[in-house]
Image (cartoon, rainbow over the protein chains, first blue to last red):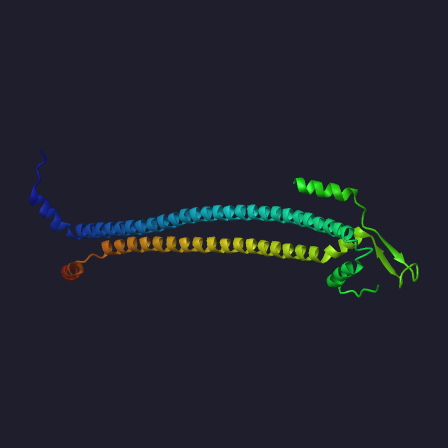
Length: 136
Length: 138
């Protein structure tokens, strides 16, 4: 067991009190500096963590945005293809309707003898359609 | 489908649309163009055909424009949503950062600032006295 002679310590402190004071103050200043440095480090780490979170968040948002835009584009392309298909189908339908109508007119010309006996009927149709004047 | 095939098979055997150009008294009251049955039928159908084609084209173009507009609108909506999310994220992170900094400041300058002030004054007095004693000794 180490025995401390407090009287000697006191005498030593009394003799070297200036040096002891300087050492204590120096240690206090160093301690305070280290504490401040730790605080600064903690602040820096907080900022860094915040920035890291922002980067990760922004990347996630950006990925989600791209996925949504891809989906929207896919739906757009599908809609356009459907429209194109419907358009071509309807165009074909118009062709059939027109052909039916032509055949109908031809049959009517034959049945109603519009080239020989009932010329006026055909003439009326031409007049209605184009506004031409019929000269018998 | 069957009707379509039947119709086109019928028309395949029919005379094609034909026309001839007649001169005066050839025999015609004036010089002009003569159409056969198919020709006049096709001419008579033409206005209706144009109307149907036009309606279809207008509808198709409007639908295309609407689809394009929808896509454009959707893209804007997606962008707005993303920007709002980015904004919320930034605000949240800044709030968290501010909170952490406030905590750091609070730890640096705690509530018992009066004790610190008193300690500072006492330390000043002691240091001044000690210096006075030191200089007096010399």
